[in-house]
Length: 83
Image (cartoon, rainbow, N blue to C red):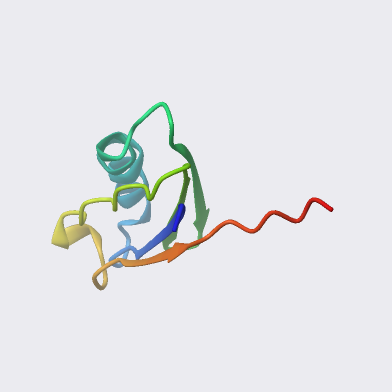
């Protein structure tokens, strides 16, 4: 597995604070020159995709007051579609 998708749902009214935590703390916790990370938002959800040659580390859990439920994380294996 070389790709991690991590998703958290913000507590009511805490979407901006959760995004700030992900950018300041969560992504920094998995920072590595060999890991490419992208952050996405949709309403009250924040998604991080981390791609590397080796399995990337999982983001730490955010503070409980920022989330509506524990984050979910799924490991994936990249598929080469070049023919």
